[in-house]
Length: 95
Image (cartoon, rainbow, N blue to C red; front, side, top):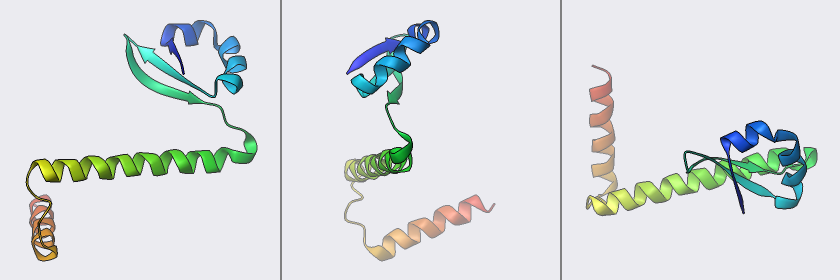
């Protein structure tokens, strides 16, 4: 996978767009940290690609939540305890 800086993207956008189909993905960095992923897509598969990216993000978010619940010792809460926690948070928001 190719990495490029924001500055490189800004200064060489046309060349980068030409390379993208053969590279498939490129990571854009700012101050050495990844900030974006450029991914080649076509008109025919745009919606499918977006759906796949969104699904992957959702799965990653669920995995992070599950890890945090294990770290906090909350993985064994009953459905009743979970509902009580949700209700408490909702009550706190309405104030």
